[in-house]
Image (cartoon, rainbow, N blue to C red; front, side):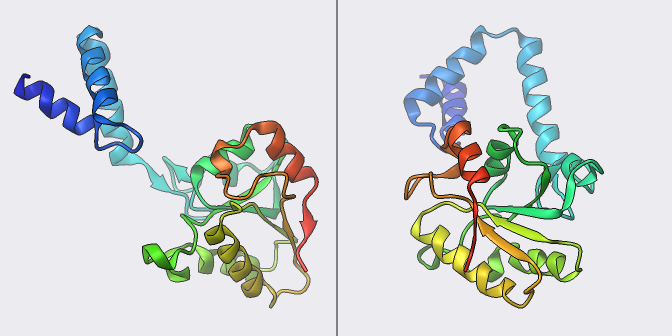
Length: 198
């Protein structure tokens, strides 16, 4: 095998979910593509990596200080939906059923992986709620053990704000499912049937 081909396969195989066979198929597909298209792809990926940043308000990915969602005055700025990752935010946005703001934690509490509350954007969420403009916090966190741990930790942190309604999305989502992979209808149902956390 060519050294260049081996290097290309090795680079593709570094991506999550891409094994050596898929990496080889991707590398071979690049050879079938027009040279200009490949250059445009690599330029776009390099620019994405250089210029993407986290929104200062919600931790979503953005190419400016505030993401388009936080900058949208038409949205309900008194409601915040808390999600683990940007992919979860995108899944909820695709339903077109939610018009509030978001807060991306950046993961869940996982002692086994060395991830504690201080490694997530929980303090940032608490500061936002403490500012006094938030009326409801919707916890849209996966139903895994780590997700439940994170949910209870956040609920305890938000108890100091009794005027803020804390809700949890309805559990039409199966235990252990990742929100990013749940279909839009299930997410819509879960959002409409959220309940207040006691």
